[in-house]
Length: 566
Image (tube, rainbow, N blue to C red; front, top):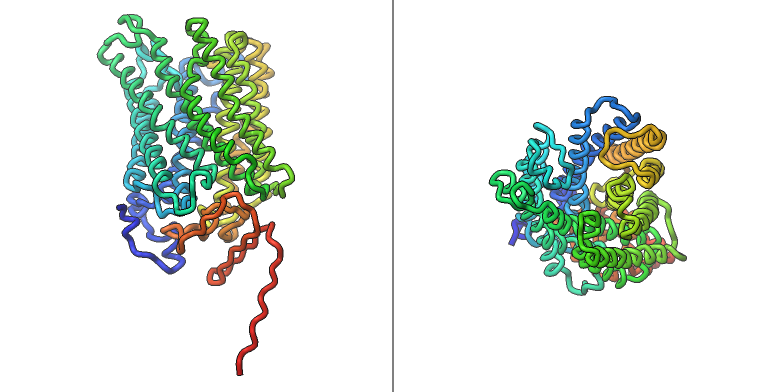
């Protein structure tokens, strides 16, 4: 049993609040509280995102003109490798599962903590060690292999490939430990009355993501170890010079990396399921279909890796099978989008900041999914492969999906995490600027790719300059929108109003505790209800001075006090 479970209960509000329960650096560095670990993850992944975003702006600035501005070809290759590797391994994969998941999963279950608090803290420090190892290796002399470390180039280049891949190996263990912890927590710590189909859909998405993390990440670990062994021992696994096969590396890498796409997007889908229901004040449409679709996406994710390799020389029958499976995986994703839209129908939709990000998610993710049809079809994938069309599609799914869903989740649960409300006006402005900037950045890249502009090129012909400049201005507008969102969050910490326990009228368990939650999450055992049952609900607590009545609740007159007896 964890130290958290054995500690005494605290009654005073200041000591109960997990943010102030015990202060000082060591109290955070050695904490077993899942909420503090989640916030430390949040700070870490946002720092990684800031670094990767700055590198992206450097790349786009270089592409303003067809000729050199300030980066040589070699430096350009190193910058896009850093941008892609940091964004994928240090931000997108751990952002929702490790940061928001650590904070929310136990609270949504009505539990005090995750099943293995010490393993949880260990996974965070593995992420920190892996990040330091990874970044120091890549920044020391520079690496130009791209984030995929494709052979045979990665086995022959002079860059720090071994050190960088060992950093990826360490990060993989962090991901495995996090996934394992969530699987055990959801299986064993659900409260009485919370059956599988009474769980919030965010927990379903987290559970499906955890399965992928536990089953697929070891494949990546084995692959990068084989790559390191190839470079050090020259044993002939991937390098043709030693009778190795570089296509084998692609099979290994994408067998992990395509399921990893769903490690990135499934938690974002879980967030949108929660936001759509809460901010429409309506029960989620097709609960079981959304729940099953999360599991279906996780299973199909292991079967479609070959569509990344249609130009690698696979047999025709094999490519046809992978193409058919790729189209099949779109079905559960389409089910989710349909059910989200149906949830809003005749609902009491409130266009607040989280809801605006949810609508942006649906629009951007739909574009990403539909453009994936061209890359899943054999006839169109060949001319579009390795062009800017792939870059735009990938960013619409990963950034337009994962990042926008992540921001929607941060704004949705920010009052719960910090006890502070934020400016709705500036939150909506940040969403609008991000939405316009994102489309201005990546819509022109679909045109560039269809006209033959290859990706990862620092130089290009003059006919592409206008579209590249449009994309670059869009990238700076997108960056400006993200800085507005950051400013909204920082301002809320300093000047934000005190948040009530349930500012949005949610029905899941995390809204039954104070904002921010007590050290042990709940002062009293929470009531387990249908997480999407928006019947009249009331939340009152005279001692804390707050009162919330659900928007759908009728006005209930206060009972007339009985006359005092003489």
